[in-house]
Length: 222
Image (cartoon, rainbow, N blue to C red):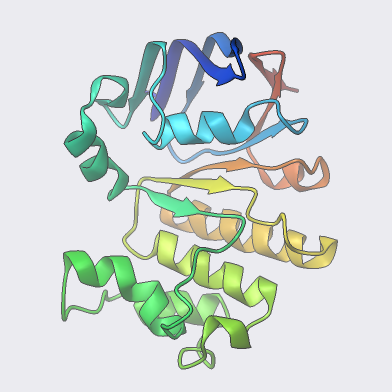
């Protein structure tokens, strides 16, 4: 049974006075524990597709089923509950400047489970090389360190799915490869599905499967 199943997905957006079609009957499946890269030119709809998978946007038609949940038919409250069960990683880190590293990593967890430190916390931060950074504020970290904080936050609650939107977009090539290698390795170890948007062909070698998005269609690259 696929973890992600997208069937006949159609989505359009307003562009001035006109309606622009972004996706036309897109179909794809992602199996359990796979790490998948979404490639495509700027403006091809990569981030839009990720937002549809995250339930931030709703399709015009078609179905999006994730871990047995037909999220394309969910109402706002159901979508909010669904998003708490997945991990999200952003290009611009989305860290809270007034909180230190440890507080940023634990922020979402503490909203759901106050006063309960997850048992894998210390193992995770050690693997990410953050053990000596816990008391630092985001502005005291490099870009790569900030993104490792974002990865720790996304993985901490052991989600079944992580959606990553250009997580290396603000990093140089060396740090980009380091971040993607860390992220894919952690997801493989923890059997977490990963869907990552990137514009970099070089980073695709870390993934089980690669899809190219072009002209409203999604095609698997061999």
